[in-house]
Image (cartoon, rainbow, N blue to C red):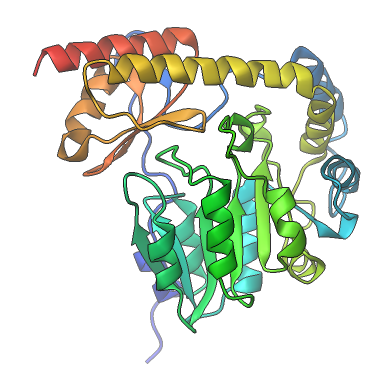
Length: 358
């Protein structure tokens, strides 16, 4: 007997939402969105002008691929045009990865907690997540290497990690990559590359050149402040890059996004002055939150991780009541984006009240 209605794929029932229901703003007073890793600064005035001009042509389709942006990235990164991949944010490219590179029954290794898209992409493809717990809030690369089996088709690695902000560094990352079999895809997500200040920061664009199994992802959403326009990019060797392009949504990067990204590349000096302000704020806030003896891991991103454990929901609810909206991971901790100084000051003030109230 046929079912009474169309039935979605059964795999979907076990797939979590990408981002749960956002925090509720307080009933009165200002609220600060520190639950998404957004740049607190709007696009530069010159970029906003380009966006406004490009909006006049939204009755026209953009190119199937943003060829001008691909050309610019190819020149900036020193990689062949055919190696560059684009998508509507790096999340869009992850969907291409799931379609092009993962098969039902494949195993995919990644750390946890890490980027929330990982289990969604893996399960949507019918593949099997192999989640390796963090050690000291950081990727346990030895355990991840040990988790690779003949059934493993891919490893997903966020460097620095989201949501903890921690990093493994170039030396450990290279040693790990050398352990991964050549037929296993490694996706190195460098969404926070521009905020990474350590002298041991790896450069995925250099690493991929002699590693045909390495795919490196970056984005215009964070440092460049174009989160709302959805434009991400990556580099990979031609066989992988071509496969991902076949699975891309045609015209997936809008003409407005392409123009804004191109102009942002030209305005990097001004944009990265803002990045310096954000990283300085990150260190100021971390020092203030850690002063009472509370653990706040060093971050190489535009956010901080508060390992609150079972206290997570109580603390984040109290922050929310005061207008500081954070991203709670119940039982683990909270991720707090570095916002405007006023938002950061309020975060510090409320955190101190919570500590005194214990």
